[in-house]
Image (cartoon, rainbow, N blue to C red):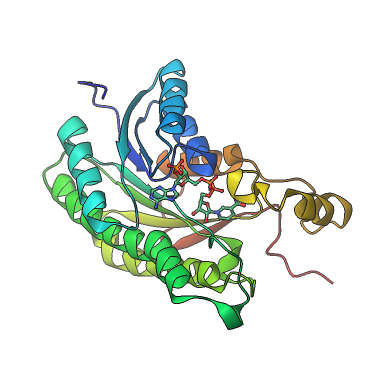
Length: 263
Ligand code: NAP
Protein backbone atom coordinates (compact mmCIF):
# COMPACT_ATOMS: atom_id res chain seq x y z
CA UNK A 1 0.00 0.00 0.00
CA UNK A 2 1.05 3.56 -0.63
CA UNK A 3 0.18 6.32 1.82
CA UNK A 4 -0.36 9.81 0.47
CA UNK A 5 -1.63 13.07 1.97
CA UNK A 6 -2.08 14.58 -1.45
CA UNK A 7 -5.41 16.08 -2.45
CA UNK A 8 -5.07 14.69 -5.98
CA UNK A 9 -8.15 13.08 -7.46
CA UNK A 10 -8.68 9.35 -7.07
CA UNK A 11 -9.86 6.84 -9.67
CA UNK A 12 -10.78 3.20 -9.18
CA UNK A 13 -10.04 1.33 -12.41
CA UNK A 14 -11.29 -2.24 -12.27
CA UNK A 15 -9.18 -4.77 -14.13
CA UNK A 16 -6.17 -2.46 -14.44
CA UNK A 17 -3.45 -5.05 -14.02
CA UNK A 18 -3.44 -5.68 -17.77
CA UNK A 19 -4.78 -4.55 -21.12
CA UNK A 20 -7.15 -1.64 -21.51
CA UNK A 21 -7.44 -1.02 -17.77
CA UNK A 22 -3.68 -0.74 -17.50
CA UNK A 23 -3.66 1.77 -20.36
CA UNK A 24 -6.32 3.81 -18.55
CA UNK A 25 -4.40 3.69 -15.25
CA UNK A 26 -1.17 4.90 -16.83
CA UNK A 27 -2.89 7.68 -18.77
CA UNK A 28 -4.62 8.96 -15.62
CA UNK A 29 -1.44 8.67 -13.55
CA UNK A 30 0.37 10.85 -16.09
CA UNK A 31 -2.28 13.51 -15.39
CA UNK A 32 -1.66 13.35 -11.65
CA UNK A 33 -4.53 11.11 -10.64
CA UNK A 34 -4.10 8.62 -7.80
CA UNK A 35 -5.08 5.18 -9.02
CA UNK A 36 -6.66 2.19 -7.35
CA UNK A 37 -5.34 -0.71 -9.41
CA UNK A 38 -7.75 -3.61 -9.19
CA UNK A 39 -7.05 -7.13 -10.37
CA UNK A 40 -8.59 -10.56 -9.93
CA UNK A 41 -5.82 -13.16 -9.94
CA UNK A 42 -2.67 -11.77 -11.59
CA UNK A 43 -0.94 -9.98 -8.72
CA UNK A 44 2.38 -9.85 -10.60
CA UNK A 45 0.76 -7.90 -13.42
CA UNK A 46 -0.91 -5.57 -10.92
CA UNK A 47 2.44 -4.91 -9.22
CA UNK A 48 4.03 -4.22 -12.62
CA UNK A 49 1.31 -1.66 -13.36
CA UNK A 50 1.89 -0.09 -9.96
CA UNK A 51 5.61 0.17 -10.67
CA UNK A 52 4.86 1.90 -13.97
CA UNK A 53 2.43 4.31 -12.28
CA UNK A 54 5.05 5.20 -9.69
CA UNK A 55 7.72 5.56 -12.38
CA UNK A 56 5.39 8.08 -14.04
CA UNK A 57 5.35 10.04 -10.77
CA UNK A 58 1.96 8.74 -9.71
CA UNK A 59 0.48 7.09 -6.63
CA UNK A 60 -1.27 3.74 -6.64
CA UNK A 61 -3.03 1.36 -4.32
CA UNK A 62 -3.33 -2.25 -5.47
CA UNK A 63 -6.49 -4.10 -4.40
CA UNK A 64 -7.55 -7.61 -5.35
CA UNK A 65 -11.29 -7.95 -5.91
CA UNK A 66 -13.41 -10.13 -8.15
CA UNK A 67 -16.12 -8.15 -9.94
CA UNK A 68 -18.15 -11.34 -9.91
CA UNK A 69 -18.16 -11.26 -6.09
CA UNK A 70 -20.15 -8.41 -4.53
CA UNK A 71 -18.51 -8.82 -1.12
CA UNK A 72 -15.05 -8.29 -2.55
CA UNK A 73 -16.30 -5.22 -4.44
CA UNK A 74 -17.49 -3.78 -1.13
CA UNK A 75 -14.01 -4.38 0.25
CA UNK A 76 -12.51 -2.60 -2.79
CA UNK A 77 -14.52 0.53 -2.02
CA UNK A 78 -13.75 0.30 1.70
CA UNK A 79 -10.01 0.00 0.98
CA UNK A 80 -10.13 3.01 -1.36
CA UNK A 81 -11.89 5.20 1.17
CA UNK A 82 -9.60 4.04 4.00
CA UNK A 83 -6.52 4.93 1.96
CA UNK A 84 -7.60 8.08 0.14
CA UNK A 85 -10.91 9.26 1.68
CA UNK A 86 -12.41 10.05 -1.72
CA UNK A 87 -13.45 8.58 -5.07
CA UNK A 88 -13.56 11.03 -7.99
CA UNK A 89 -14.01 8.48 -10.74
CA UNK A 90 -14.92 4.83 -11.18
CA UNK A 91 -13.98 3.08 -14.41
CA UNK A 92 -15.87 -0.19 -14.81
CA UNK A 93 -13.36 -1.87 -17.08
CA UNK A 94 -12.86 -5.44 -15.85
CA UNK A 95 -14.51 -7.93 -18.14
CA UNK A 96 -14.18 -11.44 -19.44
CA UNK A 97 -15.01 -13.36 -22.56
CA UNK A 98 -16.65 -16.78 -22.23
CA UNK A 99 -14.08 -19.45 -21.32
CA UNK A 100 -15.30 -21.41 -24.33
CA UNK A 101 -16.86 -19.94 -27.44
CA UNK A 102 -20.02 -22.01 -27.71
CA UNK A 103 -22.65 -21.58 -30.37
CA UNK A 104 -25.72 -19.87 -28.88
CA UNK A 105 -27.60 -23.16 -29.30
CA UNK A 106 -25.19 -24.64 -26.75
CA UNK A 107 -24.53 -21.71 -24.37
CA UNK A 108 -24.27 -23.11 -20.85
CA UNK A 109 -25.93 -21.71 -17.76
CA UNK A 110 -22.55 -21.70 -15.98
CA UNK A 111 -20.91 -19.58 -18.68
CA UNK A 112 -23.90 -17.24 -18.91
CA UNK A 113 -23.91 -16.68 -15.15
CA UNK A 114 -20.14 -16.19 -14.97
CA UNK A 115 -19.92 -13.66 -17.80
CA UNK A 116 -23.01 -11.74 -16.73
CA UNK A 117 -21.82 -11.76 -13.12
CA UNK A 118 -18.38 -10.32 -13.89
CA UNK A 119 -19.33 -8.01 -16.77
CA UNK A 120 -22.70 -6.63 -15.67
CA UNK A 121 -24.03 -7.64 -12.23
CA UNK A 122 -20.78 -6.72 -10.46
CA UNK A 123 -20.35 -3.37 -12.25
CA UNK A 124 -23.99 -2.49 -11.56
CA UNK A 125 -23.73 -3.00 -7.81
CA UNK A 126 -20.22 -1.52 -7.63
CA UNK A 127 -21.61 1.57 -9.36
CA UNK A 128 -24.51 1.67 -6.91
CA UNK A 129 -22.17 1.64 -3.91
CA UNK A 130 -19.74 4.14 -5.43
CA UNK A 131 -22.57 6.44 -6.52
CA UNK A 132 -23.87 6.58 -2.96
CA UNK A 133 -20.36 7.37 -1.68
CA UNK A 134 -19.93 10.05 -4.37
CA UNK A 135 -23.23 11.70 -3.44
CA UNK A 136 -22.10 11.80 0.18
CA UNK A 137 -18.69 13.22 -0.75
CA UNK A 138 -20.20 15.83 -3.10
CA UNK A 139 -22.65 16.98 -0.43
CA UNK A 140 -19.79 17.16 2.09
CA UNK A 141 -17.81 19.35 -0.31
CA UNK A 142 -14.96 16.82 -0.54
CA UNK A 143 -15.24 16.22 -4.29
CA UNK A 144 -16.68 18.13 -7.27
CA UNK A 145 -18.17 16.67 -10.45
CA UNK A 146 -17.15 13.03 -10.02
CA UNK A 147 -17.53 10.74 -13.00
CA UNK A 148 -18.48 7.19 -13.89
CA UNK A 149 -17.10 5.48 -16.97
CA UNK A 150 -18.24 2.11 -18.30
CA UNK A 151 -16.10 0.19 -20.76
CA UNK A 152 -18.66 -1.40 -23.06
CA UNK A 153 -17.97 -2.92 -26.44
CA UNK A 154 -18.97 -2.97 -30.09
CA UNK A 155 -20.49 -6.29 -28.99
CA UNK A 156 -23.33 -4.26 -27.45
CA UNK A 157 -24.82 -4.06 -30.96
CA UNK A 158 -22.80 -6.57 -33.00
CA UNK A 159 -23.99 -10.18 -33.07
CA UNK A 160 -21.39 -12.87 -32.36
CA UNK A 161 -23.41 -16.05 -32.00
CA UNK A 162 -20.47 -17.92 -30.47
CA UNK A 163 -20.36 -15.61 -27.44
CA UNK A 164 -23.94 -14.54 -26.84
CA UNK A 165 -23.47 -14.09 -23.11
CA UNK A 166 -20.69 -11.55 -23.73
CA UNK A 167 -22.82 -9.56 -26.21
CA UNK A 168 -25.79 -9.54 -23.82
CA UNK A 169 -23.60 -8.34 -20.95
CA UNK A 170 -22.31 -5.43 -23.03
CA UNK A 171 -25.78 -4.54 -24.33
CA UNK A 172 -26.92 -4.47 -20.71
CA UNK A 173 -24.09 -2.13 -19.87
CA UNK A 174 -25.48 0.24 -22.48
CA UNK A 175 -28.75 0.56 -20.56
CA UNK A 176 -26.87 0.68 -17.26
CA UNK A 177 -25.04 3.77 -18.54
CA UNK A 178 -28.31 5.51 -19.40
CA UNK A 179 -29.93 4.63 -16.07
CA UNK A 180 -27.09 5.92 -13.91
CA UNK A 181 -26.70 9.01 -16.10
CA UNK A 182 -30.37 9.83 -15.61
CA UNK A 183 -30.36 9.23 -11.86
CA UNK A 184 -27.08 10.94 -10.99
CA UNK A 185 -27.20 14.12 -13.10
CA UNK A 186 -28.84 16.05 -10.26
CA UNK A 187 -25.73 15.45 -8.18
CA UNK A 188 -23.36 16.67 -10.90
CA UNK A 189 -22.18 13.12 -11.59
CA UNK A 190 -21.81 12.50 -15.34
CA UNK A 191 -21.78 8.97 -16.72
CA UNK A 192 -20.10 7.87 -19.94
CA UNK A 193 -19.73 4.66 -21.89
CA UNK A 194 -16.70 3.98 -24.04
CA UNK A 195 -17.16 1.35 -26.72
CA UNK A 196 -13.77 0.00 -27.75
CA UNK A 197 -13.43 -1.73 -31.06
CA UNK A 198 -10.80 -4.39 -31.58
CA UNK A 199 -7.99 -3.61 -29.17
CA UNK A 200 -4.68 -5.46 -28.90
CA UNK A 201 -4.71 -7.09 -25.44
CA UNK A 202 -4.49 -10.58 -23.95
CA UNK A 203 -8.26 -10.87 -24.53
CA UNK A 204 -7.88 -10.65 -28.30
CA UNK A 205 -4.49 -12.40 -28.55
CA UNK A 206 -6.29 -15.69 -29.23
CA UNK A 207 -7.88 -14.29 -32.39
CA UNK A 208 -4.94 -12.16 -33.54
CA UNK A 209 -4.45 -13.78 -36.94
CA UNK A 210 -8.14 -13.62 -37.78
CA UNK A 211 -8.32 -9.90 -36.98
CA UNK A 212 -4.97 -9.10 -38.59
CA UNK A 213 -6.50 -10.32 -41.82
CA UNK A 214 -9.85 -8.60 -41.33
CA UNK A 215 -8.38 -5.24 -40.32
CA UNK A 216 -5.19 -4.96 -42.32
CA UNK A 217 -6.15 -6.84 -45.50
CA UNK A 218 -9.92 -6.41 -45.70
CA UNK A 219 -10.38 -3.01 -44.07
CA UNK A 220 -12.93 -4.13 -41.48
CA UNK A 221 -12.33 -0.77 -39.78
CA UNK A 222 -11.96 2.42 -41.83
CA UNK A 223 -8.90 3.22 -39.73
CA UNK A 224 -6.82 0.19 -40.70
CA UNK A 225 -5.04 -0.67 -37.49
CA UNK A 226 -5.59 -2.44 -34.21
CA UNK A 227 -6.71 -0.24 -31.35
CA UNK A 228 -4.34 0.15 -28.44
CA UNK A 229 -4.98 0.46 -24.70
CA UNK A 230 -3.58 4.01 -24.99
CA UNK A 231 -6.43 4.92 -27.34
CA UNK A 232 -8.90 4.17 -24.56
CA UNK A 233 -6.64 5.82 -21.97
CA UNK A 234 -6.70 9.10 -23.89
CA UNK A 235 -10.49 9.04 -24.08
CA UNK A 236 -10.82 8.43 -20.34
CA UNK A 237 -8.44 11.33 -19.69
CA UNK A 238 -10.68 13.64 -21.74
CA UNK A 239 -13.62 12.61 -19.55
CA UNK A 240 -11.58 12.77 -16.36
CA UNK A 241 -10.33 16.26 -17.13
CA UNK A 242 -13.91 17.49 -17.60
CA UNK A 243 -13.78 18.14 -21.34
CA UNK A 244 -17.32 16.77 -21.87
CA UNK A 245 -19.24 18.67 -19.18
CA UNK A 246 -22.62 18.92 -20.97
CA UNK A 247 -22.74 15.26 -22.01
CA UNK A 248 -23.99 12.38 -19.92
CA UNK A 249 -25.25 8.93 -20.81
CA UNK A 250 -23.10 9.37 -23.90
CA UNK A 251 -21.54 6.53 -25.86
CA UNK A 252 -18.06 7.27 -27.21
CA UNK A 253 -16.97 4.86 -29.92
CA UNK A 254 -13.22 4.24 -29.87
CA UNK A 255 -13.21 1.72 -32.65
CA UNK A 256 -11.42 3.02 -35.73
CA UNK A 257 -14.83 3.70 -37.28
CA UNK A 258 -16.12 0.11 -36.93
CA UNK A 259 -19.63 1.36 -36.07
CA UNK A 260 -20.08 3.19 -39.38
CA UNK A 261 -22.50 1.57 -41.81
CA UNK A 262 -20.81 1.47 -45.18
CA UNK A 263 -21.87 0.86 -48.76
P1 NAP B 1 -7.67 -8.41 -20.67
O1 NAP B 1 -6.45 -8.02 -21.42
O2 NAP B 1 -8.10 -9.82 -20.62
O3 NAP B 1 -7.53 -7.84 -19.18
C1 NAP B 1 -8.59 -8.05 -18.29
C2 NAP B 1 -8.35 -7.29 -17.00
O4 NAP B 1 -9.51 -7.45 -16.20
C3 NAP B 1 -7.19 -7.83 -16.19
O5 NAP B 1 -6.62 -6.77 -15.47
C4 NAP B 1 -7.88 -8.84 -15.28
O6 NAP B 1 -7.20 -9.07 -14.04
C5 NAP B 1 -9.17 -8.13 -15.01
N1 NAP B 1 -10.24 -9.03 -14.63
C6 NAP B 1 -10.70 -10.12 -15.31
N2 NAP B 1 -11.69 -10.70 -14.61
C7 NAP B 1 -11.83 -9.98 -13.48
C8 NAP B 1 -12.67 -10.10 -12.35
N3 NAP B 1 -13.56 -11.09 -12.25
N4 NAP B 1 -12.55 -9.18 -11.36
C9 NAP B 1 -11.63 -8.20 -11.45
N5 NAP B 1 -10.81 -8.04 -12.49
C10 NAP B 1 -10.91 -8.93 -13.49
O7 NAP B 1 -8.95 -7.63 -21.23
P2 NAP B 1 -9.05 -6.25 -22.06
O8 NAP B 1 -9.00 -6.57 -23.49
O9 NAP B 1 -8.14 -5.25 -21.49
O10 NAP B 1 -10.58 -5.85 -21.75
C11 NAP B 1 -10.91 -4.88 -20.77
C12 NAP B 1 -12.37 -4.49 -20.97
O11 NAP B 1 -12.53 -3.96 -22.29
C13 NAP B 1 -13.35 -5.65 -20.84
O12 NAP B 1 -14.53 -5.20 -20.22
C14 NAP B 1 -13.63 -6.02 -22.29
O13 NAP B 1 -14.90 -6.61 -22.43
C15 NAP B 1 -13.59 -4.64 -22.93
N6 NAP B 1 -13.34 -4.68 -24.37
C16 NAP B 1 -12.19 -5.20 -24.88
C17 NAP B 1 -11.99 -5.20 -26.25
C18 NAP B 1 -10.74 -5.73 -26.89
O14 NAP B 1 -10.70 -5.82 -28.13
N7 NAP B 1 -9.69 -6.07 -26.14
C19 NAP B 1 -12.98 -4.68 -27.09
C20 NAP B 1 -14.14 -4.16 -26.54
C21 NAP B 1 -14.31 -4.16 -25.18
P3 NAP B 1 -6.07 -10.24 -13.85
O15 NAP B 1 -4.82 -9.67 -14.46
O16 NAP B 1 -6.01 -10.45 -12.39
O17 NAP B 1 -6.58 -11.43 -14.62
